[in-house]
Image (cartoon, rainbow, N blue to C red; front, side, top):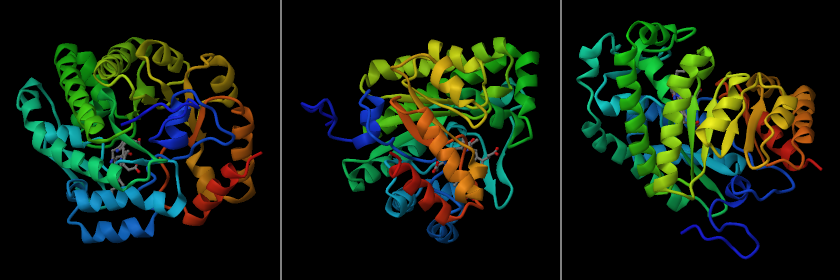
Length: 354
Ligand code: 1CP
């Protein structure tokens, strides 16, 4: 049970949850997007033992171990469930594979015919397996650490379902939405319903907070952004608020630039993940909403480079975010080539900031 203490702090989730509830601390809580993954030798070892990436996601014992690896090594303030945003299409019945060295490969949705074969009822079995990992992690994690559940934003998930994988700009979904908006709206609605069901199940299993990864949000012009990013996100956030009023939602509408303000004002997210391209002054002063928690936004390439250049930028970010509700993170996922020493140095730099 998450109980509010006399001093206004909370008993589960430590500094991370306290920040999300409006309690400031001397240095910000830290986690990194994609913190469990290929840059870690201990991850690569388990990944070799597991029979494929999806199998790793669906094996609670191994997925639990991988989720906890970055916490053991770096003492981050939050663990993020080890899974993937493409679990939702897979659970709905779409064929999804992760080919070695090539990334995701899906049987693309090219018309209403493929869409009609997907089924919300089918998701239970796979969602249950993933949520078994959530409850195992929560049991193993000390109470001062938070557990982040997640799924993809409906728009971003739809881009993969339609393109059948990664492309440079995920344009096939944009094209589909222009040509056949009715069918596209049905797809977005299905993903939205599945996401609500999935996140709610993660929360019941022990997730203390959830993040929506809308990595391709920035590709849309404003009208489309409203239809395919803001409205579905608003539905997810408002339904989760009704079902689980104490669970904060972090939105990450990557590369949305000035549309980030509409996203914040319309969706009701508690925290906003800022990507690398968002200026610090914009974060600190233009997003003028003191109750909103900011998260971000060190360039993952600077973490790769390390040394003084990285430290200087970290200090610049921390200085700008002084006295602001803030969670330290990267502006996008950690790169597989990143050295583990640079991550150690990042954590030390943040925790020794005065
Ligand atoms: O071979 C391997 O080991 C697979 C590499 C890998 C990993 C470690 C993939 C394939 N997914 C993941 C885990 C993952 N993915 C997590 C949990 C771990 C953590 O954060 O520590 C999360 C939150 C994701 C989210 C995810 N998957 C996003 C959103 C964030 C982002 O980076 O933009 C996206 C777009 C995906 C799709 C995906 N999964 C994997 C790949 C190679 C891709 C395609 C990425 C692309 O299009 O560039």
